[in-house]
Image 1 (cartoon, rainbow, N blue to C red):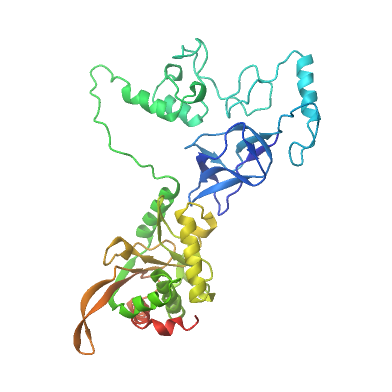
Image 2 (image 1 turned 135 degrees about the horizontal axis):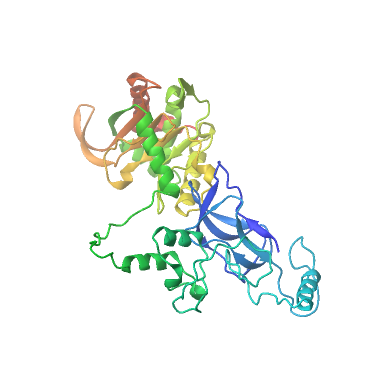
Length: 426
């Protein structure tokens, strides 16, 4: 019975948090079938199983973190309908060896387990190969269970939570299958535990959101950016009337894609902004890997279009659309969220005019565009109503001065006002 272990998810990730199991014990799985959703520090990914067979045990519950290399599933052979034999697991022979093992157990007087053993729970009478049993809780009468038996707790997280709060697991009623105690059961016990004599119970705290996973990674990068980058911000109001006309003529190209195209052209003229600081050196990068801010149900992510400087406008737009869709669906690969050299952001979709955005560390700059609204504008000496927006550039003042930053921003602004010259490759 092979064990399927949490694979290396790339980009230096060492652990993942189980979000949702896609299979249950007893389900049949086929090769490369997704069996679990795992959240890393960069994305939620579906993990496929390389084996075919029946799920005999799952290791870990939703919310539990597992290190890369930890066992996720045990996959066994299909139970034969009769006495025939045949291939029951890809690459693992026929059903004869398992039958012999069951006969040996009967001859030795040891009964085989009647049902699959849950992950991290090893009954005393089992002789099957399982991970080392978790040390049992002190023997206390379990509410609703036999006296003297420790309650079944699958997740080490639940045990630790109870231990740190001085709760006896045997006194907690489990709401999971077979009376398994879950984290919600421990939290409920804590909320109803009476305060010690003479001690006033503190007011219930507000909703707490852990800074873990993707949220924790974003928080760390933002804090590092503010701490290490001496940033400055420049902005300019732009007549975007022709910009909107160009977008209407190219239905497959979004406003963000057009801005991305103009950004790449600007970085060719002002390459200092496509750089990063390493120690006491500014490293000006040859390739433009363009990131763009995308809002998802899990928070803000920044997918990266590789080699944006080699793409046409249409190709760049298609890549942005594909990555944005994958990000919103929670299926984007972790590798697609790293390695950016410059970021663009359309915060106008939130109905705001401008923003002094935080640079996406370790990049050197971020360009944003605000909402496009009707405003009075002077055209050829006459006052007119035009579509106006604001472009904002936050940049690392160590990599360039205001002249370079202003020159880049003015170039992009000119492209927005006269977009036809930037779209000659279509």
